[in-house]
Image (cartoon, rainbow, N blue to C red):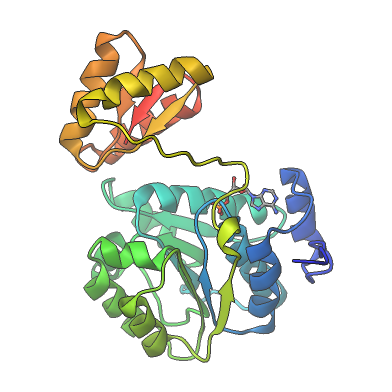
Length: 303
Ligand code: AMP
């Protein structure tokens, strides 16, 4: 992008600019420069972008701007629905929405599976401006008559490819069918495949195509390096890199829960404070583990 636009020039309201300033952001990222004006104008968008590019703010900021300037009473319903594939992402997006909206009078509720449903039902009583949800739990709440989706004005599908990869297609289609036809929809995906195209064709209205440059799909604070190595040497290589680069905290992604458990045993046998996180744990354990890693109590987190 040649000329850099400021958040203010994108047309965001003063009390949103203030929250952005508190976060310390100096200028919008590329996806934000492209998506924010379109959502402010009322266009549907399909945006190809990955985590780390600032995509959460690229839909949250303009949606907050719109709902706070176009004042309507909630009447027990939901105004904005943000669907996300994982519980962790729900918590993260919920925190972002609250943060960016802290100077607005906006009610935000986050619902996810794996935890008691009752407090979520109470939170939803009387409706909410913004609802962040994983699909399964949202349908559970709907089936219990705890959520009203009749006047949703904005739908955001975050990490739509992952929603489909995780097998949420039926849930997703069922949820979208419950929403008013007249609404605005933003779809974010890291990849574009046939299923995403089908989803777009079915549920989006003349969407604007937004792409960020390939090299900017990964945050520019990240360097990626490939180390070809024999299977049996992977653990030792990990420790060598850890020592050579004097890493302080390491997040290791592996392809199965078993591999995670084996690597954890190895790291613990070398006396490194380590944990694993995977779908077999309760949501409480997952959140605790993540917090320990964020607070620096764990050096290696195997996911
Ligand atoms: P996301 O891609 O939404 O997961 O965001 C990745 C990270 O970038 C988050 O930690 C955000 O707080 C941060 N971020 C988002 N927008 C900006 C910006 N304009 N300037 C600096 N950091 C940002």
